Length: 314
Image 1: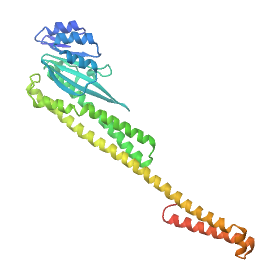
Image 2: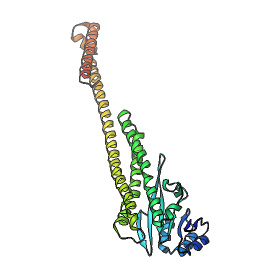
Image 3: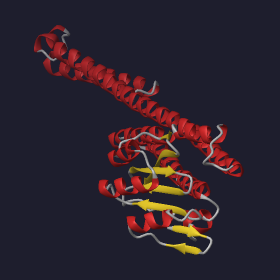
Image 4: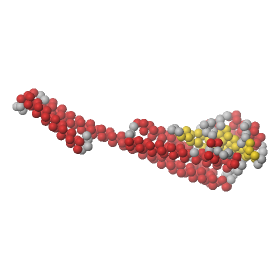
């Protein structure tokens, strides 16, 4: 897209970009949705992008950062999408004196950002730095729904730990921990990006835009604070799960101990007095002795069972 005082026009080819950029009154937004090296090399030659920046864009394995290369700023950010599983998409942005270049995978579309749904020409007409703010602000605002859904899932897992602790909960907790770690790697370094943009003299960013970028910086501070809270909640939930499992295991061991004591006592007495010699020794005769010992064994077992029931082991 090229904005000039005469109007706005699309730039479908690299040749159209070259022609539009030759007009000193034009401001350009070039959005590249695939890693075409030949196209990036052509655009780099037209817009004056450093070859190392083009190489970083093609590699798609950068961390969130801001770097100055010649007369341009290279900014790397991430778009987060959460639909049961977290997905992070690298977004490379190059800001120049009269242009803004964005490069990303096809799974993310900057035109779907809330700020750009009504068109990017209004922002581009105010300068490439204003369009940069519209994009990064939309990216950061998109983090809040992701955080809300993760927060709801953590709350549900906490309830499940109390009601019915299962191994599935542990698996999900570890998945949430991995998601939070991915978010931390994507979001936390972005604070430094906007710290630099708002606290350094940057000729590519107009003075009246600093307030806009500071607002984005404030949002990132809030998000990183929430991220730390979520990580603590996941750790606490995992500790609660382990405590619940240990308590359940303790209850089972109590019951097994009580049953063992009862059966061991019954078995010992029955083993001794179940012999015919024991019955004759008591001079009750074999039949009477048998029934006496049997009654005694049952009474002892019942007394032990009553005692363990009173102390809560049965």
